[in-house]
Length: 355
Image 1 (tube, rainbow, N blue to C red):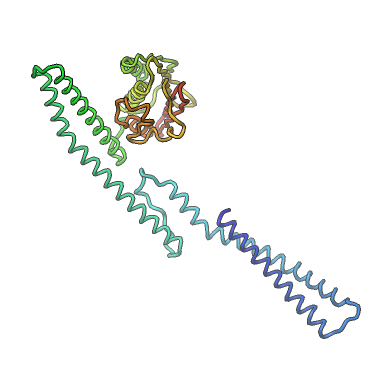
Image 2: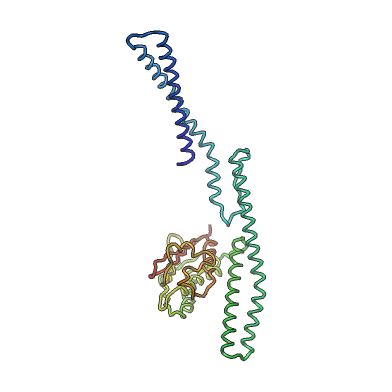
């Protein structure tokens, strides 16, 4: 029950009690006192007094109660309307628009004070998020230089040094780890800049069907290591306004994810359709699937899913987070549907026009 309904019920109960009190006082004055001053033998005066009480309640009490309830409901509606506005405005605030503030009435009442407290809390959250972003950007920047140096030294050592097979394998393993750290740093830098609104899309007319066909060729290369078959389904001609580089990155991330989290001799299906004025790209892969309670977390940063299935999968846990950002930056949506064992499907819907 809402606060407005509770207040209305309590207000109505108070009015009902007031009517009973009016009736009791009317009975006391019109019946009891009159009975004390005049002795009636047949009780007709009592009946007449009760009729007067009912008449007073009917003609005065009931209309007054109706007016009181209506007026009280209107009063509470006007009084609680700012609460609804505060709740609506607060629900729209997330990590992407922490600079927004709730509108204050300025009248100094309790609700205005509550709004001030909310705004102070949002300001503290904005400051905390900003500090986290700055720390991540600075850390990523500081890590890039030593990682670049380490990569160069390892590659030079592999080329110039005549090392034994065990030593070469060790150097290659170290180089792989450096490349993996570099990929993590680059992904964190991109996502942090995107959170801060520092990444601008280069919008142009893009033939998405051409990018999907290119992605199909790339997916076949990515799937070779696990003997996964890549199938290209329906690909309709679709053009939209978008960033070609980011859209290609989106398709590659999803293809790489479908190849890595697959089973030997599995399958990957790709298709692109024009559905209700939007480009709908679907990529499905066979594999162990994603548990229902984990499907809402697959786009979280560094989320790797079930460790028992993914312990041997190479990755940093940022690919789907980047894919989600690219989709949202283009005004689209991305969703996952997974049934254990048969197929896991990622569906991307992108508007054909920029709003």
